[in-house]
Image (cartoon, rainbow, N blue to C red; front, side):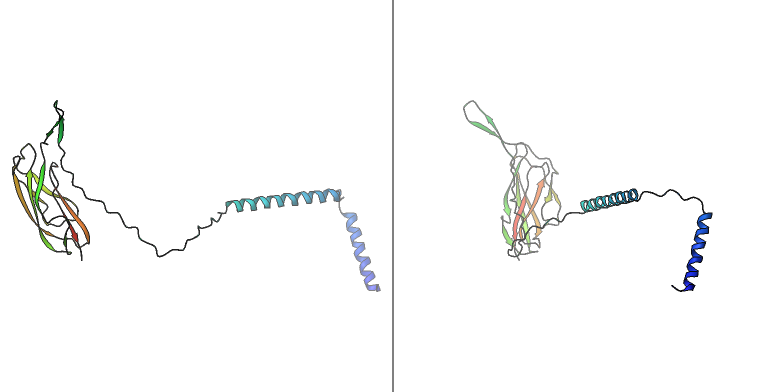
Length: 212
């Protein structure tokens, strides 16, 4: 060590000695073992808190549900709606039991039947073909109809421009002819147009097949 370095070192040591003599008394030193114990506890608590946060975050994440395996097959097929048969329900008659063991059929007060219907059921037309609808309406009830009962369109593809027709007064057994201009729908398949005589008394209808 050269003399210059020694003089500098002695000067620094002297300054430190003077400062320590003038400085206030220092706080008592802590036990190094206690300090190490506190550090270890703090580290352990910090690690535990971090583990708890990690576990909570993992629990909050949605689990991936495996997708069902696909079965190889041909091209998808469209589910075709099943056809609902159209049924005209005639008025029911009441059967009254008699003492002789047989039953007496009582006709309803208001009822009707459709005869000489044209076109026949399931007649084939092309789209937008013109044709005539013909019904002969028979009062098959036991009471007369007042004048002005309406025969009117009810449901199904509307094949006529007419919406309703007023019927004349009809006694039991009377007949009345109806003729309407009609046009077949543009859609293929079975087409059923239903009308109703108010009451309802009965349901005249047209059922055709449209084929392109």
